[in-house]
Length: 198
Image (cartoon, rainbow, N blue to C red; front, side):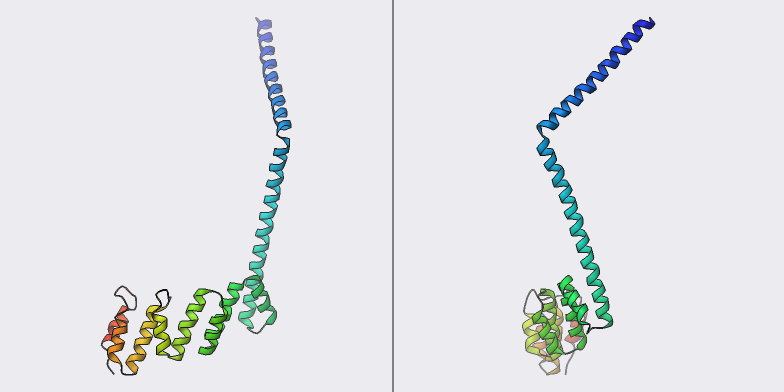
């Protein structure tokens, strides 16, 4: 019985080795057949990974440099080198910095000039409103409030109405206040203004 079992074990072992060898031969055939495609896929994967890592590194480096430049400008707004770095590495952040400085100055002309020079539509919109409000320009506030896509539309209506109240045009002011919907967060102020008489 021992010999029969040994022969059976050897047959099974040879069969397993034979299957393994057969698999290796098939894999080798597959590799030979698709060698160029497999190499191309590997090269593309390596190049793609390197490109992704490089772009990510450069993006993070630019972000760090822009943040450092902004921190420098917050301490010293006249630092020309920091302005240049911020403008080169993050133009949007640079525009926000310039706009913030203009608003901080409180000069309507400076805000208006800055809002015309920036590319960001939100900053342009805010600059238009801020300039009109600082100038207490009823006509400019009214024009701004008539734009449906104006970000600060309701606030402009409120400012416009206040100027009308101040000039004694109570009926026109109330008409303008009626444009602010009940759902607005400014509606409580609108109700207070509605009772205002000069």
